[in-house]
Length: 294
Image (cartoon, rainbow, N blue to C red; front, side, top):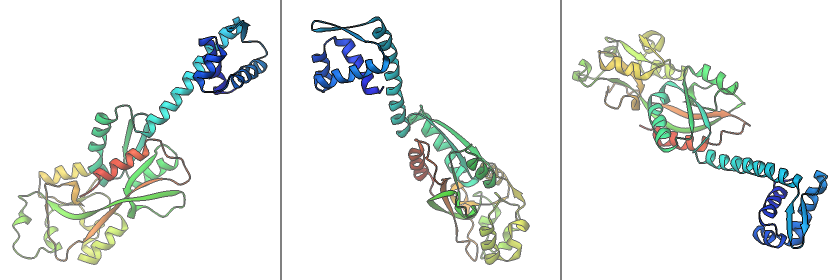
């Protein structure tokens, strides 16, 4: 039994004529007859009584047609759902965001889905990279957007680069350091609290190379939190210096250190290798590319 046979059955039941049904289905009348006869053989009972030029449903045929309509409807709904999911109009995506991407993407992604794709369910999870990776491997998440430099090499992960964002030391516009007349050295920053998210070994290495051992995050960072927006608010209301991607606080002043920090975070979309992605992932990738920039 196939959906094609069920569609043939329904068409014949509605018209009562093999000739009209075959024409509507764009097949030959003998092909339609063979299809219905094959279905009758499989079901073990006649579905139609042939009375002259008309074909009338038997009692059993009426029951079969009723159920066939439901099956065909469900099949058509499945096809429509697949198309809607591919277009980002339905389905679900569970997305894990690292601290940097979360600060930039969370609000735009949620707003865009709410206004342009209300049929799509988007779940955003934030947290440490190791926790997000575990959730991805346990299939509790569909994809991650994280700093690729913080990602340990793994054969089971598919990493697709998205963009690089500049890192910087930032402060509020009226911070005392904005009035500094001489070349700004790292020692000047250490007069104030320094806030950041947990930093990768790569960032720690760059800081030490540029500014010496005192610049290692374990020594210089006094306020550490996964939530960049919270750190931004603290820096906005105090003399705290924020070490973060520049785009996390666009209204802040970037402190021009000597030597320059000259470092970028390399963000990527991470999924499980060999696993079929959620149908709406192409849309999510497009939105991430659209919003994740300096």
